[in-house]
Image (cartoon, rainbow, N blue to C red):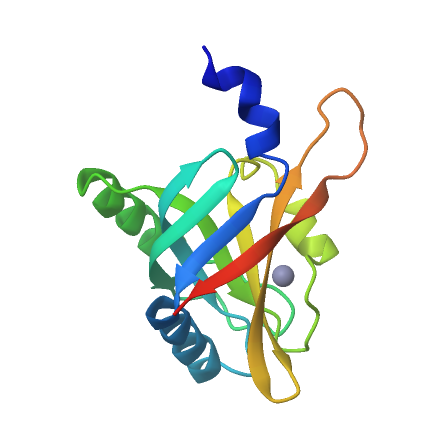
Length: 158
Ligand SMILES: [Zn+2]
C-alpha cells in the first residue's frame, strides 16, 4: 500500500489529543478520588500513532490504593462490552499518580503486557494543578527485558 511506506514518518511523533471538556471531566473524577489512585478508559480513534480521545469512562478501583490503580473487573467487562456494541473503540487508559510522578511506575510497566497498542495517560499534580502526561508501552518479545515506554505528546484542544 502506498500509505504503508510513509507509516514511520506518521508515527515519528506520537500524539494524543483531547478537548478541554474531556480533560475537565478527568480532572474532576481524579480529584474526587484523592488521596487514592483512580482512572478509567479513553475512548476514541487511533491512526498512525495519533490518538484522538473523544470521551473518558471512569472505572472504580477494585480497592483503594495510593500507589496502584486496578479497575474493578466487573465494571471493566461491562464497560468494554457496552463500548464494543456502540461501535466505539477503547484507545487507551488514564490513571492518577497522587504523589506527583509523571512517568509510569514499575507496577504500571509490570502490567503493560497486552496494552502495547494503546496510549496510557497519567494525571499528576504539579504546583497545585493536575497535569497529564502520556506514554506508549513496548515489550520486546525476543528478549526478557522489562517493558519500556515512549513519551506521547499531549495536545489539549480548546
Ligand atoms: Zn501508575
